[in-house]
Amino acid sequence: MSKSKKLEFRPNDYVVYPAHGVGQIVSIEEQEVAGFSLELFVISFEKDKMTLRVPTNKATESGLRSLSSPDVISQAMKTLKGKAKVKRAMWSRRAQEYEQKINSGDLISIAEVVRDLHRTDDQREQSYSERQLYEAALERLTREVAAVSGADEISAAKQVDEVLTSRAAAAA
Image (cartoon, rainbow, N blue to C red):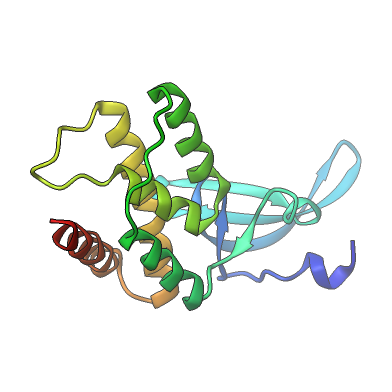
């Protein structure tokens, strides 16, 4: 792996780690592990009060990526407007697929989960596990929208909610 590929992230950069969503690189540190010197990205996930250390040479393999471009954000918003695609599979299989999409770190996949699990007030009640997955996906989407637009999470959440509400209104 080339040096330039390895150091594409710098301290204070916001990044997306698939299993945890948006975090911020606090520093890049050297650590000795089993007699080898290892360079690590130290990533802070403030909301989860968690710090993750990812070896810089494994960053790309682990799925660590930069924030989405504004184009990808608008594509995600377009995805939210789409019609929910709910497969006829058993819930356990669908739940597994939703979880994989959320943990893929792919914003469009995450938007699909939000779209497919979104319920308006007059729709049937969500099960506990549906709500958990929906909220996890919604939180990931909202945090990335906020980080990309430089807005706070509340206005990002409002933006996402307006898109979902407009979709529901159009469907009615």
